[in-house]
Image (cartoon, rainbow over all chains, first blue to last red; front, side, top):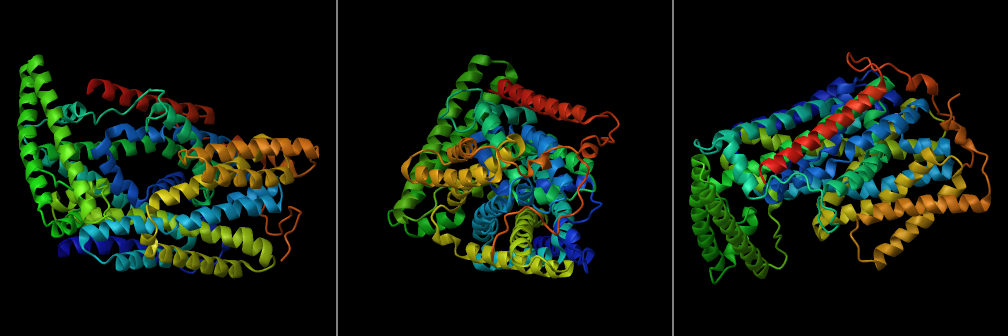
Length: 571
Length: 60
């Protein structure tokens, strides 16, 4: 990175953080600190919800996903619009009517205190464990590519987000997310534009899409009922609906973003903004990856995108196997490029037969080059058994560093950091709020001033920030960290969602029944997790279904409950 | 530290009337009811899926 890149990166990141602190300085009102500006409009809410969900991994890894597997991943978001409509109709009016700070307060109103604390504890456990990953995951990639020290990258980015989140609270989070998302979109749109300009001059956009489609990168929708396929319309619609309901409806890091609206209207429109724009946003990020794939058909890509891992392997390669494989890869790439030219020439000439033949040969060449890459990964593993052989996360950052002009590189790296900070800030804010409202204020110190609770919330946010930093610094001790965090999330998410689904939709079930049902369902999920060999995503469904079923059975056994279910009724 | 079994919360703020929150106007020029907003969101989802299917078919 050049001096200009550093100026763009540090100027934008520190500038936004300082602006957020300055604009929210001196605010000691608990509602403003935890919920933010009471006059916030729908656009700011929508941006805040979007920025919270879109972590740095979204912008670093998703183009790599498009490069490797094409557009199919977009189907994962198909359930989200429907989930957001359900939340806008059912969840949100109830949260606003009860004027809660956290989603778990609602459980207290609807059921009882023990159920509220159970919901809050499950959130803190799950989100607290995941807290380090939003700093660690991008830091490991960026430090590898930029040659920075990993611990310094983690500490500097972590401290920056802790400082402005602690000082400014929810208002600072929403305010900074607005500008951070502007940096993110500015960076991604610029990268898209530069990529289009860097494609070969004779290649039209239609030709580029033809090449991408010819290599099966544009298969966006798959209506197959085969459950073994990773991304299909049906799994995206049903699984996505389920996950989005859990995440947007019950996870405090999201609930806190939209309950702060000036009115129900503003909060609802903020959610609908995401319901409309999330799928196109993910589509364009994936399309960016597909077009990077096309770009690298005319410009030889690295045989392995994680340059640091490649260099380490090359240094421990006495037989020079890696060099030999690289030469083979280069030869296949040159042959493939010629075949793609022949394919496009035949297409322009209207010669269908020649077009099909050249396309089939190009596809075969791609398969051979992928086989060489597989050999490279095997060789890297034999040189270092701990080597990470999945280089998909490094595709986009490699393109950025190798092919974008200075200044734009700084803007893109700033975009990645902005994404990391915006999602991290919302997480810390939610962890601090839940600890303060659901535990400290409700259990430990029930009578105190607003200023006291604001101070307490700042300390809890700071402590959660330190936990996240510590976790990020020692994260490399955990094998396959992202998967580990996803597993933890799936183990708890189903039961938390069930608490809310029972609360909203099964009025005859009371607090005692759902509390014990949740504990039993959670125990069942633990037992099944250690005894069944199934995809961890299924535990979302199992936990939720078990909790709902158990609560109905327990309620039937203990008889009707006369309790606080009237919170669901209109006066 | 004893957990309370009642649901009362001395810090609970004023609640909004349920009927009023559900009936708030959308304030949007083309969609006067929330039902119309949700239908628009659903239709835009269907349109996006349709466009993605068209892309898949065209370039497969």
